[in-house]
Length: 162
Image (cartoon, rainbow, N blue to C red; front, side, top):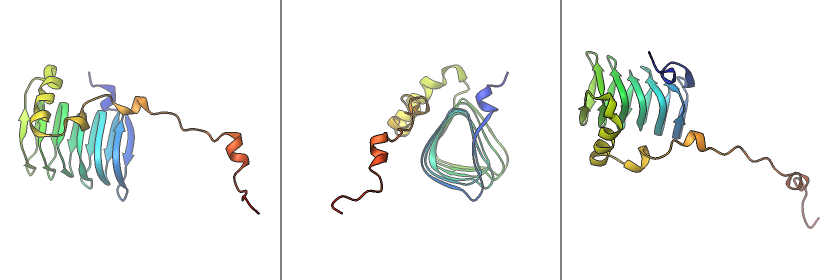
């Protein structure tokens, strides 16, 4: 039975859109635009054919049809579609690639989804930045936006010394 985090679209970065920064998503992320920074998802990351990523990806699973310049770490399955390019290290317990794909970096396919987190930690320690991809998932720890207090709002628009 498929994981619901891999099938419910949580966010879309459409063609013509650009994001510069770190993205934490609880669910599926579809990217058809440009992203620079880092991407962490509890579900699937789908990079469409127009997607251009200059970021590391850490996800439950991923499908790549565009260009990714950065390491790709998945804990279940990675699929690279025809025309998909990854310039970086790749770790996946299960891996599938169509004709016409390019990977420029180290590729590790363990075939052991049950021990993916342990194997991934060893792989990242030897290839990448452990701090960026391990640790608590941030999306659950975001604080709610602070509302301005009535005291602060009352003082807006006034000039002192008039």
